[in-house]
Length: 94
Image (cartoon, rainbow, N blue to C red):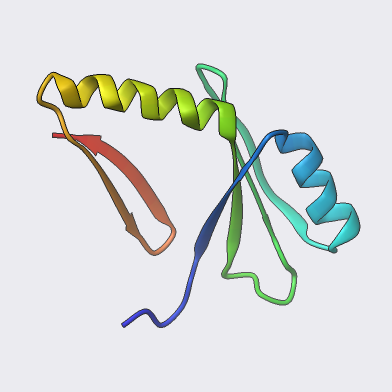
């Protein structure tokens, strides 16, 4: 049974615009904004009254490219596995 949610990912077309909307309009606070290399950026915001929840934004165009790469890997016999636990989000290929 799920007792609480720690991380929600929203796919957006513009991470900067999404962050401005959540912070400036909805009153969320910025938690993380880190460049991870290869054009990937980890951006999370959260509401001050619910600090255990992180809302992560992922650029839709980058996610589509990731899915294309995974699809090519599947045809070679690899299968992507996504594991989520608490606030940990990991992607592994087996």
